[in-house]
Length: 403
Image (cartoon, rainbow, N blue to C red; front, side, top):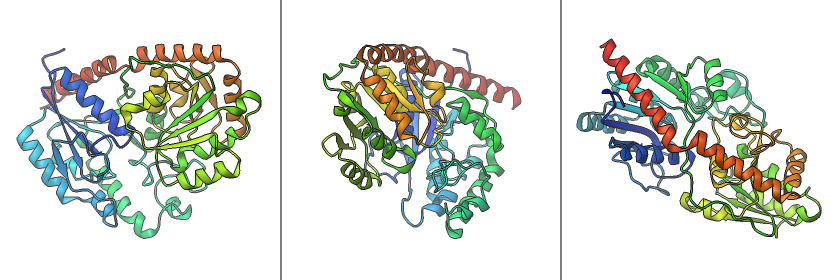
């Protein structure tokens, strides 16, 4: 490592704890930096009371209620907490992760004189909804503004503060020295809307010591939020199309969300009540244990996810993957090698892929082995941290040269 390796890194993120994939990435990064003798601390909101651990060192007041849109745009509590963190901690690097859903753009003028890295996790910098997905389920190809109203994504009152937020982001974005994208597809989408990424560095995973141990009766796994863009309804409809021995397969769904009642109703209407098990929210550390006996893990998303952490985690476990061929998934899954890619939103194609694998256990095991090998080579946290530290050092060197 060079002489410009940072000693102190402040990680800024919307939420604390381990509520979702982005939070897992942040916590893994923090641990990895600490393991390299770098003092890494987190600044995050208190908006998620369900999964507060591990607690951040610096906390500001967030909101999930009526005041949320205003706080996302201008949050005085954030300003006070950020100033305190910058003065007391004096970080060499400020690494922004997911912000704009709690952390407002007011963070940018505060860190302007620091070396600032930004890793976007979702589409909020170019889409107030964060998914680039219309209410009809189709991908949005338009810029922020009238389309948000015309397509029913927002009311005028809901859209206005978010347009102000994105305007402030544009005004102060020059405070950012480097932008990291977790995938090439996400980088292309951001570039279309004026945000240029300096480098693609995937989100890392820790490779578990315990790998798969397939059940005698095939099990299919899903892990993630139960929200429309995740396409769990497509997976349940695909389950109803399985035939023969594959038609006895069990589907285990890990996760919670507003779609759960509707999904449970759909499973009942399709006669799948005994074959679809909703296990609710499972601590991240227990997901590998819950799914290590699954034959395959399905990622049926209908939106162009910027990355696919659950996909990489399944591969790291040695589980074959069937995923939608949209967003970053084609960069992660090697079609017909570590898994199978299918068109998004198509229960028939998804069922065909699942059926094909459930009828060939040897192929499932081979795909799992190749997936684990690829996860170790491409996504392991050690090599990814090395790349990140190289970026930190380069950014610090450039900042010193320009000062």
